[in-house]
Image (tube, helix red, strand yellow):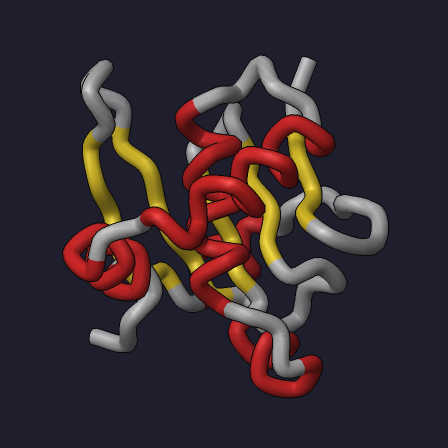
Length: 118
């Protein structure tokens, strides 16, 4: 069964291969040796979402600009989903709210670098 999580609003929709491959911003390998992709997809309805099966984290950068929502909040929120896949949306939202003010400049910079234009 495919596990997908949506972030902040709307229903998650299935990924199309074209959407995933359209604007891959970065790759990284996690501690278990799995390769993850960070993708900017301005066509999606949510601020961000994660696909555990394909190991893809998608961010809607245009929506953040339009709605004036904090980008770092969504980047960190999706990273928490990746790190804690068994936690639900409520728990991740609470963790984001509590931990976001404690993030170092270095970690924030790492998160922003995940979606920076190459």
